[in-house]
Image (tube, rainbow, N blue to C red; front, side, top):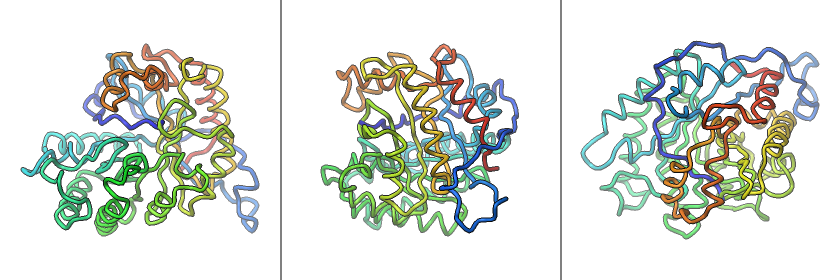
Length: 370
């Protein structure tokens, strides 16, 4: 099971209590020889990579306040999701309140020195998120692709140098498993969107995301591999347990090696996490081990993995998780609800869980890209 990201705009509360911090850490980490080309100069810097964190502030806290907590440890990238159907609900134009909120939020992230991985999914884990008036059209039809290109144009107009990655659809292997839509239709839509991004912002890296299990299966999902290969980067979601596309039992070091062997694209782990709920077999101690192992595996593969986004900074409320599980048709699955609620490195009451110290120490022990 893999988590479909909540369709939320967290930027509405960013401006209260926010501070400006440098996103760089202080201590260089030793990158294993396997991550450096054999003919590289001995004084070559480590490969450029960035650390991201999903920050949805709990309770009365603001995202700006929590960003100020995270950035000094080296967090330099924040994920943001606004589905196409939220930007453009129907055939009467864009929702300007959402567009304006995107513009203001991106300006804020830019002002504090954060990069953004923005998702504007047309296809998500359990839903197709196109405007309502396009719901009966094939994804690769001229009407849908033209509207998608117009949406991309509008989105890019609201963004500046802070925008680094654009995710065009999310965990598509789950949605497309029943053959509706088809991989060919999604590939056609994605190609049209990528063409528009490259024409307007050649510096922004694009792609679609698949679950870790799509590449860890034996053999890997060929349609997923092809879809990733057609784009700038391969976006992956990876969770230890309790979700729709769980990691294998081999551990993250072996899994990362297998994932990288399955695709020739740079790999961005757009979501990576470990839920501590006991019903899942999770624990605070297990999360500590997972976080340490994730950083170690990343060190070994630093040249192929430019970005890893840890999900999440905070646990969530039971009622919120239940509502979210209901939306996925998993409302009676207590383990899934617990998964949603216990992914955080910190509690909903904003108290550190044991892995928070591991995460922050590991982040500070490494040098991150500007």
